[in-house]
Length: 273
Image 1 (tube, rainbow, N blue to C red):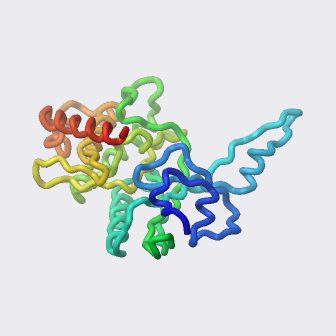
Image 2: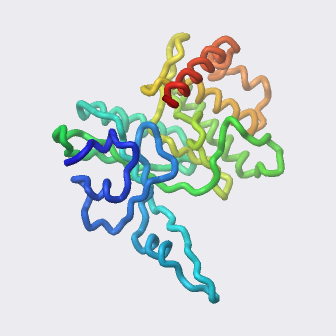
């Protein structure tokens, strides 16, 4: 059986086709994506013919071109271990809530599936997802252009407003917020849409004043609230009055943000270790 894939640092095509739930004669090539998540392996699903052309190239007007193979889907294999089916279903339920609040065109949609994974530890539940492949530029919430700047299109402003409205409604009604704080979790596509690609780390807002940490020790809830505020302020041009209203009012105080920064620094130090 070999080593448990959830413990492996990276996966390649041979690792994937060796899995008991993947066909050995798959017409696809699985390539490690340059951006790996802390909670899941991320692999590009490529057509074999596209990979062959990428390697072999083709002649065009006397020049040999080598077009990069573009993924048709992204395969995500979760690292988390589940002891019972209810835990897996709860993970999927949070994704369904996310899909209910965010506009579908601003979300990298995913089809989740549960498999019976067999390793040296015996059969276990494993959660996977086939996700839409998103093409565009990373939208870094900590380094945003200002609303009205030359590089900020009217379409990006409009779609940013739709994204913020859906996320705030999810916060206020469901008490949940997706992880939009991480660099690479949001993309800006060529047509000006914001796409959330990290769709599985959804935080629950605390009912009290405590600062919750996710399963990796990161203050994802507070940092995502802060990132959302930055998007609304810098991309949507929100007025100062909006930035002190719900849901920002109890999270973006100077005292709380200072503690959150300390927790974030501790997380980054542990990550480097």
